[in-house]
Image (cartoon, rainbow, N blue to C red; front, top):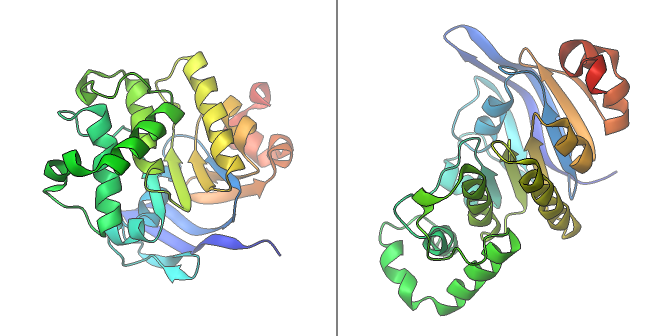
Length: 253
């Protein structure tokens, strides 16, 4: 049996009586790209927030490679090798592109985020070289000294991806990684994520663009109304009548 690295067990989460997640069970296998799709409000981002410790479930647990994540703080989960790219890019707007990548790398290496990390960057020659290489990998060569605040939304998403990759996570969670990108940028991101997959990194992707999903996913879980209504390969999901009715629609398959 293939090794399950992320196990979501009977997770429930409600907000003011509204059931955002109900009876959610999910297994992500080592090295796979697992997509989570579903209509707006299905609970997809809530599920990722539970996985990274931003939300505590009302019931159930999340386990990563034998470590129970439920109850841990986000920085503790990060130290275990879990990184997340958010739906809205979260960067340091007043720092340069290069500094944005160096800070999480330095903080991750030292075991916690340090408020004085910025002031130590100048002495980190090896880390600087690694940050430059990571930025080149995501298509941001030549922008090292640009302010993050001046970047386009698509470039900010690439920057945030670089901020995660330099931490060398074992599990990468991506919340709509191509949102706001033009088609050529989307295709470049698909190629990059395929390259990451070839390196063996496990990924969970939330995405509305079915071109992205079917280009990358080994398996897909479908959320609707806070419940998983189907799981399977892309081919199985395309042909699932429940999925067609709840989300894809005949014209999208």
